[in-house]
Image (cartoon, rainbow, N blue to C red):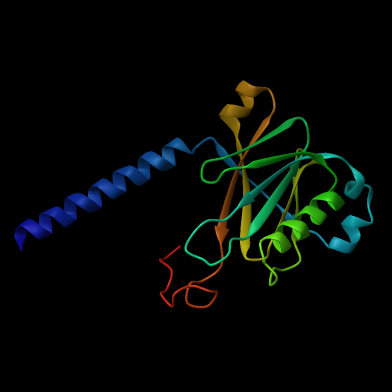
Amino acid sequence: MIFLKNAIQKGMMAVLALGLLGLSGCASYVHMQSNVTDPAIILSSSIADKKWNVVRFESFGPYMYQVYGYVLYDDDVDVRTQSVPLIKLGKMTLKETLQDYDKTRLANNWYWASSPVIREVPRSGKLAALTASDNMLEVNLWEDAAASEKATKTVLILTYRDLRRLDRDGGGGMQESIR
């Protein structure tokens, strides 16, 4: 019993040390605030016809289907990720991106997808990026300040959280772990 208690304490210390190390490693990341926009308003504005660099990403996990998201960004921005592959789609307008969203979801038999949630991501008073994703993805962009200085452009790190639950949204009835 004492051995087990010591092992648990050492394990907890190791997890704590790794957590602190991880936090100190991300100290140069700044969360980019985003604002959900009204699709009707943004699609009728000049932003909808502007050509952006576009990447698509796909969730992964134990679900029968995966959900998709997009990041649209300017030439002075670079988007990276630490978790999922990014598919570079080249230059597209927001309207073309939303058409690709529909084409991709239908090609993958993803008929129950939501209309994409569009978020604006401002930086220094101008629009740095847009995200478009299913409402079951919480998409976040973080500025990597250290990499931005080296690259002479804004480096954004893409993260997302899948909001589906296994017991409710097509999984095997087991609850998802604590997020």
